[in-house]
Length: 180
Image 1 (spheres, rainbow, N blue to C red):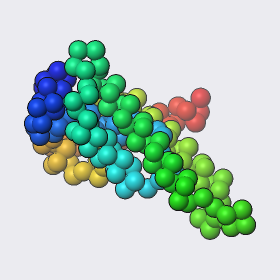
Image 2 (spheres, rainbow, N blue to C red; image 1 turned 120 degrees about the horizontal axis):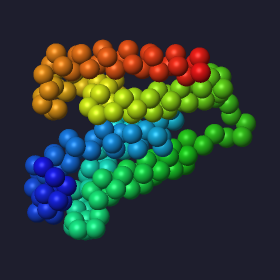
Image 3 (cartoon, rainbow, N blue to C red; image 1 turned 90 degrees about the vertical axis):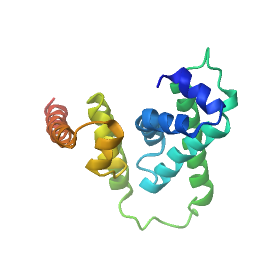
Image 4 (cartoon, rainbow, N blue to C red; image 1 turned 90 degrees about the horizontal axis):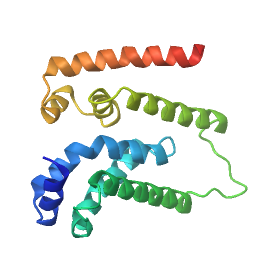
């Protein structure tokens, strides 16, 4: 289903169009949200922000201009706004008192872990479609191989093979960055 049909369906309140938008753009929304809040919030917070994006898309479908607006750009803008709102919420509710301290461990290690996560996520995106989507669905969203196979209309053995080859490619990329 192309974007124009998805937009038209969303405006006509067809759930199938929302499902198609989620299927088509969930990996993209995950990347946008993760790039803003990844490493700073839990996986559940990221998932909540991603869900909020599609709820907002559904609730505001009448504002999408099917002729001039790209659906991907529109969804990307919603994703950035939702992620930034999440960060504001975190900042407001979790600000540390000047005299308090973090018992989470070494702040430098926390920062390194966040940077490593962002770097790894960026490398996954470099794998290209459909490999990056399979990796995101499996490792970040926790989807089962069978679910990925069904959602992407790919054979189960193909999903397994792509996961294995993607892991091998990521390993190579890590060695190249370390040595280069």
